[in-house]
Amino acid sequence: MQLRDDIFFYPSRNGMDFTGEINSNTILIRGPKHLLIDPGIILRWEELIESIRADGLKPEDIGLVFMTHCHPDHAEAAIKFKAEFKTELALGNLEREFLGGVGRTFYRKEFYQREKAGSRYQVHEYLQPDKSMMSPVFSGPFLYEGRQFRLYATAGHSPGGLSFHWPEAGLLAPGDNFFPGTIGAYDLPGGSLWALSRTISILNGLKDVELVLCGHGRPIEGQRNVRDNFEVLFEEIREKEAYKDAEGC
Ligand SMILES: [Fe+2]
Image 1 (spheres, rainbow, N blue to C red):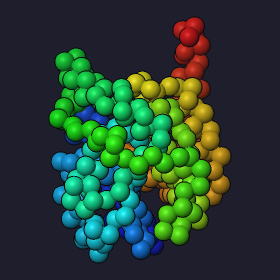
Image 2 (cartoon, rainbow, N blue to C red):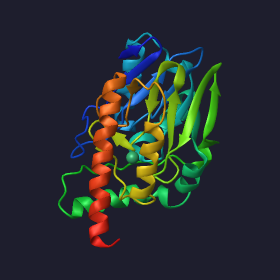
Image 3 (cartoon, protein in one colour):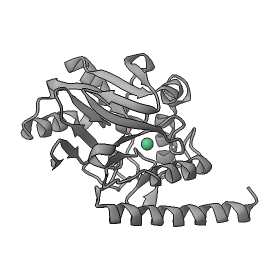
């Protein structure tokens, strides 16, 4: 679905419901060569490709797939883009290192344990793209097809995640660091409440953000709603930090 002139959004079927199939939202920025952010899971890849075509765009014209972090609900379908279209893949440098170590297997283990514990999480046989498939990218200015984007090192949900910012369009894609109405999970390997709190402060400081497309959940549109959402996030962080304090951590 087209949200702005050159911004297309492909929401996952299950929104913020993490009890069934887990898939991320996908963003496409149209250009001479399109840029795609977070391709999602392989199970929904063909559906994604059809939706992109239905919007009058050619998936073959996607020049780069960028991932906010390595979790397979965001990154698994990168494997398909590489195999079918030879698309270049990009992941933050530190996250790429994490993917080469703990990040390679923990997600599947995590879900297996949750299933054993009686959770309704659906376990997929996720594939994890190999580190060697990914080009490393770094925080700072990010030039692509003549456009000036910025990447911010935003650990918290995962250790080397990068948030994507397009100042000219007022677009922010924070991955899973936060969602509409709540902060992201910080209890997965490499996550940290302290880092997440810092990340949210950094992202809150960005000027003129008027469209936030999180890794899951609906778009947050309009500067007022973006600001209000940050207030809700800070409140939640204050509560969590106070709780940790009381625990003596
Ligand atoms: Fe994630």
